[in-house]
Length: 274
Image 1 (cartoon, rainbow, N blue to C red):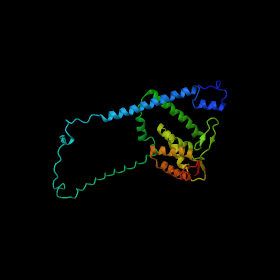
Image 2 (image 1 turned 180 degrees about the vertical axis):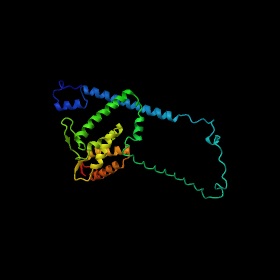
Image 3 (image 1 turned 30 degrees about the vertical axis):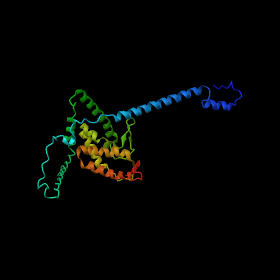
Image 4 (image 1 turned 60 degrees about the vertical axis):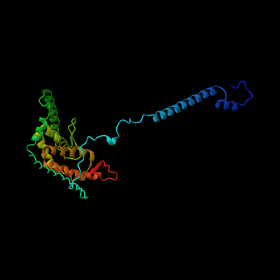
């Protein structure tokens, strides 16, 4: 080993180079071990490759006692000889019959509109009758409590702010924030009143909308709020009652909302002028 203390005449850089390249010191022993291990691994890999090639070449061929595939009798039914009709004397192929297209199902007849006076229609009765726990006393009591809570809140709106946007429950004042005097809360509550069987409340709300709703206004409104509250309320109530007035009003509103999507990116604007 070459040490710095035994050869003080060597420059310092020479000592560092010898230590770096393994000439002396502990690093030389470690690198020798690494070389030995690398050579051993390479030898093992070479032996593995040779053994694999020898075993692959000494695999036993298939037994000569088994007959060749051509002599094995076939279990499938023999192919009958071609007849004259099949093309034995005629080279033209038999045309393939064209499958017939299925007959389109006729569209169902449109459902006649339900009378406005009979808002609690058979459709609603069918929905409630399909509820599995409709006879459960606990469920019935909860349903009645929710129904009374709605009647209390909507009754206050009818009494103080009928047709306005909303009622402030603490001050009792009316607030317009979307479309003035267009019955925003009424539109937002139509389907709820139908599902709860509140016929009288629905009739009064529907009559107000029929007399006051007019979408032809120079008014900027929120696209999101008008879509979910006005358009959604009208369409959901129409899907239950089939009232043509609700559908016509929803169609008029939707046509006025479409220009909001006429943008270079396709992303709608946040507001639109009716």
